[in-house]
Length: 78
Image (tube, rainbow, N blue to C red; front, side):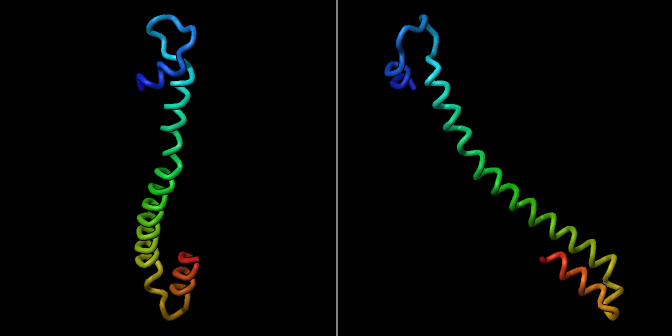
């Protein structure tokens, strides 16, 4: 960090970090957000689908002979 500050320092007051340094580290940090968000979303999606499947099994499990149970499971997976 010190090296980057020294490279970008122009006429800043003593103790002031140049804007380019802030910008670089913020961009570097934010670039990681997309992959983290997608990973967490996928984990939540798996948990959610499992919970909904269990819920539907409890509610529609008694309708196996009518085909309603199959239809609900089909729409859950598509």
